[in-house]
Length: 287
Image 1 (cartoon, one colour):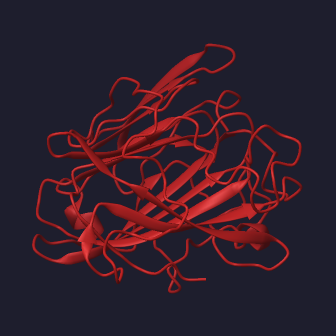
Image 2 (cartoon, helix red, strand yellow):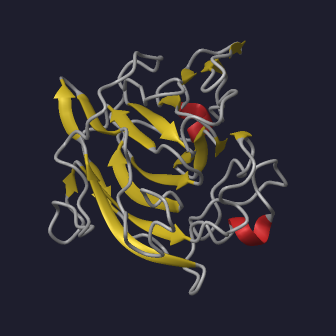
């Protein structure tokens, strides 16, 4: 979405220090909570974030790192079971007339429940200001003929600094002129993106996302990052060690990471991942 929305962001399952900076009006506000295990930043112009520290950072470059996305949707693991640094997922394209797109603006935490559903999909916890109800939300990450169109997409994570693996694109429009098309806009602004992967928890990992609009990240089925709403770029980090008890994870075991993104409004789309998780195993995306 980009410039139009601003307020505050939330990281679920841990308290947050949050800075929200105005977009068009330049206003800002600061909200803090008791535990600084995770932090969030908003910016009206570009994405930011730094994995490996669990804290806010300066704005990144506006280029796509790691060689761009792979529309073929195939990771480097051949059969999809080898560990590598490719995140493999599915885009679902929507018409802008859908009631959850081009609607209300604002940061909107609490759209999804804290536990992932039995079908590995987010569970709607509304009503909320930027969503129109469960029936529409349940289409975001499910294949619904006539409502959405699926397009496979992979993003590579590149080690841009020692131990930190990044994908960064401040003009994240991977399906321009595909699906339902741009609908009179310079880009296709109305889509969701779903990724499922597994990783071995070795200790010390941090996962950071910066972007707009919605982002829900689950680790071991528990909501770890909640950046719901139609807003400018927000950044949030989850420190796995600091939140291991809440996430139910122990060093040496393998756990799922489930990632749900939505781009719901013109005129910008920012998407950045920074993480110290060096290797992911692809998990097929459920329909």
